[in-house]
Length: 465
Image (tube, rainbow, N blue to C red; front, side, top):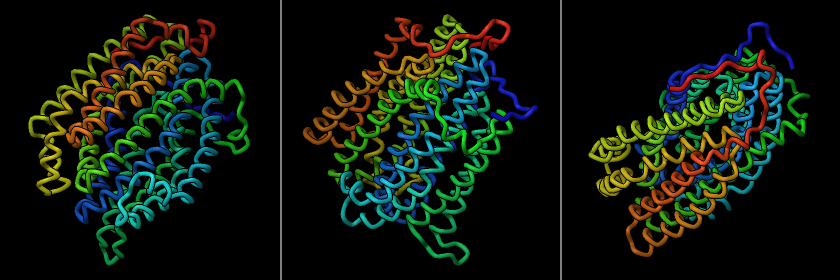
């Protein structure tokens, strides 16, 4: 595989150096959905509901793509920690090529079966037309999105979290400008509604893909050669799948769970559906504090276990978890005490929606610390190679606790959205505490995928936060 003389793969030596670009990157990524929701909300709350259901399908597709991205990120980090850069490069090529195939298949399924997918989600009949247009158009960007996820994961695993952040910023600017032009009809352009949102999102992601290809070569020395992308060594693909398939299973299970519960919400009416959409967008910004710490910890732990430094990895997770819980509490408490209500006011002035959302922000006091607990520990378990236990617990908790409890509290007892989100909180805490027990047991030490090379070529140790 070709390299350039100036390529480097130096990994930052602190959690903060990795995490702050991840935080901003994730914020920009979440901002894409928030911008779409915010701008469409000023046109029609019913269009927001149509967008929300369509985005559930899109998020499910991205979850499928992520199973290769997550798996490759862990394997790359472990190989870099072990000092084996050629194998790390081979993992990058294999991951991108395989995900292109997954993206092509997914695009065909979404574009051909858009109406069937929307009906499965109990899309109201008067919203089907908007939902169909949005979903079929957005399906176009699934192939570039699949490749881009792997490229961004490779850059992060090499420690270049700042570059991935800049790419997401560029995509957001393009999406925002495109929305303004095509949604509101600025400069005499036609008002395209949700179709305009889809078109601007597609353009933003295509530009992001081009920038990622350039950055991958500049920062890591990896050039994408067509014949290498579609040669998948069994050993490399097997290690990616060892992490990626369980991670995909868990993430897919969460998305399917959320889709099932969203179908419960759809039965409560379009205002409940719009409220959940608005609230979920704000929840993502609360979530990103814990998520960025979790991803930064994953990179550190992957390098540490690849280098055989298990005790450092063990202690790094405990430090990261404490930090994640403190930061989440500092964010969620002001939101529950009234800040969330003002944020919701940016999306809508509907009194009924604002009243419903205010109740949900109180539930977030229970939900968000549990979610952070869960995310930070699961990411570290995956980084060691221990990916099957999170999948098993996820299946048990999501389908045995979250869905039945959401139906019972939300529909049967009539608690509405409050009951739905209390069920989510019960699921997050069940899984989080079980993940913590797994980490404390140190069984993950036997799951590492690679062995360090000779001491002279092994990666230097990484300091904690």
